Image (cartoon, rainbow, N blue to C red):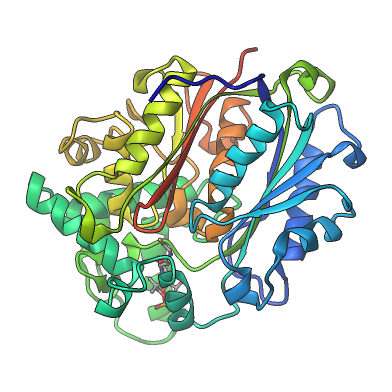
Length: 421
Ligand code: COA
């Protein structure tokens, strides 16, 4: 594929998100308005919402989760943005990553100077079994779904293939979960904002209070191996390998590079964007890497003129812990089959050589699917501007990347960001 450049430069000048979690009584409209308000407050020099020329919103399925189709004009209405164009983008769990790319293209093409990109999902009104069915409509309804595959099952398939090919063990995945909960404990937006030691302590305290036998685990891995505290969902994926069922919303403001200084002195420039697709699991040559992500990463790196070694901060799509392992190889951080060794050495921790998912990732921060890609961008916004608080990465990061997957890895959207001052 020929190397591509944007028609003109695009900058991110504001980003905001709700907490991710379960919010009974709040609709996606309420959540999106909250995310918009936070985004507006994040624009250093302020702006007039009347200047927004276009809205692109990522949403997997308000249709099935909330009985509300045709989401985009309702979101524009909620913010008082009509009659600007309002477009919904659906790409399963990559919906807001792909929406962001569409927003970038709106600005890069010259169609608009100021574009609002959003991401929304409200999953927790349904019981888990219904959520599982709704999410499973993003798997193949002809073959995967009727064979009994759920998303935990599909990622378990990738996990067993990876273990078989490279000699990894379930402990590799447990280490990813432990690390992401450690990071999420420092993220006030996280749905499960507790480290594994904190969860162990609260489970002990709760057993003591109820007069039940108090569990004794020697360490975090013992907790992770315990079928009572960490039951198998779809082997080898256990509870603490799965992202949760979540609600949440995000909002991001994109503008033409030449006017970015009107909004902030610290914009993030979009220096690379890539998107790829793939066939369903049963038609793939390999289950140990995801072609859509490799293709998207190659496009984004080429456009940006950077390589894996230049990325200071990276959020990857750990819908299940195996997905983070594979992503770290697909993005070129580790050679195929080498991620599990690097994870065991602690290289992907915040203080490691290759930090991944400083936000806590989908595992701990939460995974409201249509808002997830935007949530990753919100973390990069904070990290590159030095605003990530206790979880701020060392070394003044200036180049960041997001990796947002859809379904079992049938879609990927990847972006690279740079702060220049
Ligand atoms: N990680 C850790 N703990 C979790 C959790 C998760 N993902 N999901 C729920 N829990 C905890 C709850 O806090 C609760 O803890 P408590 O008993 O101490 O209060 C307990 O587990 C039971 O919660 P509940 O909501 O009843 O869990 P559940 O059995 O209904 O759902 C999963 C658990 C794993 C099935 C569900 O989170 C899930 O389906 N995740 C995957 C979502 C998905 O597929 N997303 C798309 C990816 S492509």
